[in-house]
Length: 363
Image (cartoon, rainbow, N blue to C red):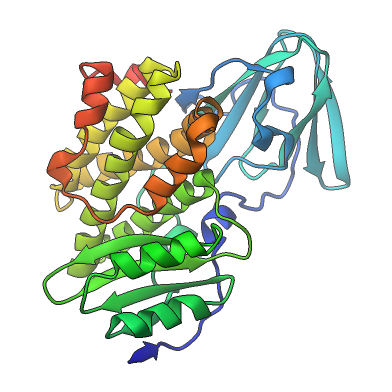
């Protein structure tokens, strides 16, 4: 038996939309920090024009309350941004700095063969994190409901999911086998984010995309799922709190056991991993104390900056260094079910030793 809830507008790219807020005036006039209360969240490796991450060649923008500081280390760097009158261009020489405002869509357009630059991500502490971003918070609320009472019914439902849809799957049995088979047969267009596993019910978010879902996109959406569960937990929803614990435990397991070890083996930055694992420990501790105002604010601030660093700096570097095994890595990550939080972190600890380095070691 299959039951599908009332349809709502599909928003499978909602987490992306949350990163492109509208601002009234898009310029690259800022050569100095725009506020005395800027807090650095991370700093990239040195990017060279001849080996540039593909995402920087495409239009992208800092999210709300985020500034990107672009610093040209050597050579000439040509950048473009979308202004009020269309595309504007700027050539920056060695030693140049530009602060890119939240919502400003920009890209690297070219430059000299020896061009190199770094990017820093900053938050304006004049605006504090009191809750997850609204668009991300609505991600679970806007999902349709799909209930399947047996395996064959679930298999038919998975085959019939339309591109652009996302739904909450509820079954009285473990759907891992059926969902895993459907993901493998989908040519990368189906993904899941498991949320709950009890003796009576299993719940997962399913997403069907029109195009194959890359690992970077999947990990970013996993952040959105965590923030959406957090929004419900902060409203006092006990089930959303359970989903938050499960989704966060699974996500940290993905990073610590599936992503970080091969990244470090490929020459990845140990300081980044050490700092992120240290932050994971803080997130785990504060998650257990969300009823305390101080711990809750600390959790929100840390999660917000942590996700930003990973999506903008760390994940692209992981993908760049693990290209040879990326397909296998993506399959392991996207096919993973729920995990016990007590097992998370051991592989990362084995790979890089002590994982309690200072927050200053974060990217």
